[in-house]
Amino acid sequence: MARAKSFLSRITGSFSTGAADNPTVDMVEAAFRHHGMDVRYVNCEVPPALLGDAVRGARAMGWLGFNCSLPHKVTVIEHLDGLGESAAIMGAVNCAVMRDGKLIGENTDGKGFLTSLMEVTDPKGKKVVMFGAGGAARAIAVELALAGATAITIVNRSRERAEPLVALLNGKTEAKATYAPWTPEYRMAEGTDIVVNATSIGLFPDVDAKLDIDLDTLKPGMVVADVIANPPVTNLIREARARGCKGIDGLGMLINQGVIGIRYWTGVDVDPAVMRAKLVEIFG
Ligand code: NDP
Image (cartoon, rainbow, N blue to C red; front, side, top):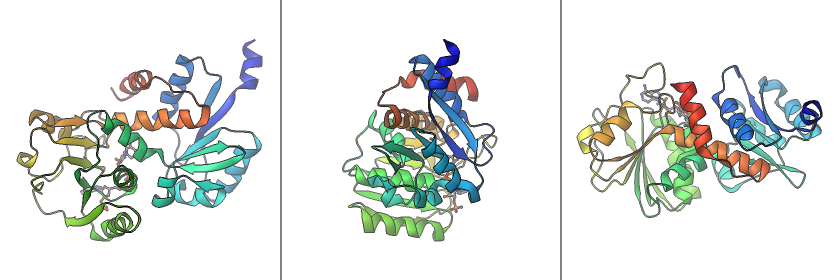
């Protein structure tokens, strides 16, 4: 019986480079096991030059879809049949989904963040300060704008990276985006509702690294979110909670993008608690 089952499994997976220790594999497979789903998530190391072959292979083998990480998030688009709304605005895909014989590119990073955020606040009508202007920042800022955030201030070390993001938000969404240089001990403006760290500051092993901000401008009731999933509780989240803010950790974003991907591929809503437990076990 076991042998027959393994031959019938449906397949999803991840196309990345340096794919050796991808926690998403354990997280997604834990959900499949918990729900008794006959689906496998396969981690594949795909060199950039062979990405097209990998996508054709996934089509030929009837994969349900796949995640892709850097450096494939933009170049994968030319191998797909269409894009979801936010992926089209961002110009980046981290999740391809087979729908009616067509491979459609979605971006679940920002959607995963938004799902976590919605558990504590609706961004509609809110003012956001976001640190960072890389891929994670772009995905989150676009979803926040599509969800009705009215003002998004992008604070980034390099102006060159921030300006295209500001232009993209102003050109393609209703939100009003502005760039603010990252001055020492950056102060959140009065009226800020949501603060997001979308930089890699604080990521393991540099867990003691701190955002250069004036922590006293984090006010009670503000929502402070971090994209860093490892460690689950960063310095920023700890300091924000100590000041009466609602802290949102990066684990939620990682888990929810997994939940959304599995829903896209299989139609099943899996239990996020199972995935969180697996990640906590991995990250400690
Ligand atoms: P990128 O390399 O695209 O962007 C990194 C960003 O961090 C840039 O804005 C960069 O600024 C900034 N930055 C890095 N180091 C510093 C520093 N020392 N001081 C100031 N700014 C700094 O990375 P991503 O956007 O793809 O990822 C960012 C983080 O998000 C990663 O740590 C990743 O682990 C996390 N992430 C979490 C996810 C989750 O599900 N929880 C999903 C995706 C990402 P500059 O432009 O000036 O270089």
